[in-house]
Length: 95
Image 1: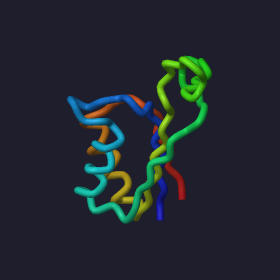
Image 2: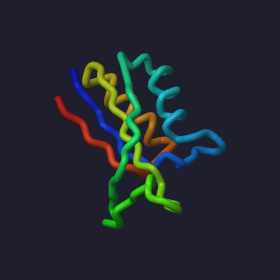
Image 3: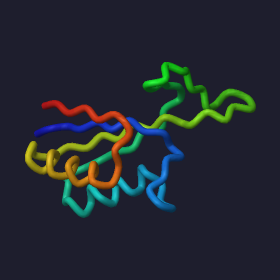
Image 4: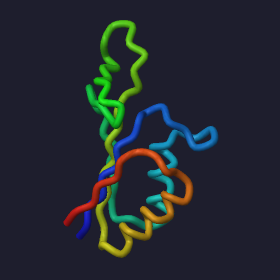
């Protein structure tokens, strides 16, 4: 089994669809064995700016973490398909 992890911001969109929902729908179409979306409390990305979406009057984007698992070939196929639609975020894979 291979696991892929995708790190994005909660309010990112593809067209009018929330990115995390788009990704889950894509994984369903790819018949991936399972996936989960986790909502982060605090995080930072390439800009090294600490995001605290729960702070009072914060306009920070909530970090989301999507994990999915399947056979290596299916994970790679799903990620290739995702990259056709979305180039951002961080993606990590491992066994």
